Image (cartoon, rainbow, N blue to C red):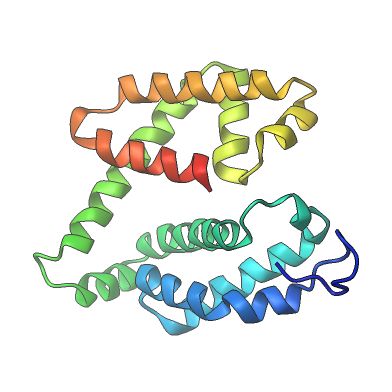
Length: 189
């Protein structure tokens, strides 16, 4: 990570240096998801705007690269969900892949799993659901969630662990590997 003043330990982060270092890789990854240069650039720009808004939290981030990729991925998936509701975009995305494309098949499975997960998350006990959503949708750390809800970080960890166990039991066997990949990605990054 780069600091504005490298002689001090935790000074203000140079967001422009982070931008220069990671923009191209984020853009390339977003192109794989969105298939449109303008939309991919918009997502990357939004990612850095969001990062700028939370600038004071940057020193707490363990891996800025992973954090940026997760933020941009989440923004891209939200944009893609909105786009797929529009028939014009649906035709565009369908036209980008051959009928037997494994990427398209993975996307369909992912979309189905996401719908199943949303239904099952809504069924979680209220406190567990709140903790899980703060972790999954808002990329908050255990400590951030604990502070926000005025509970211990161990309680947060236990609630998320229990939520994962419940969700594993509710998801069909065919979705289990994808569910584990999604959960591991969310936990590790």
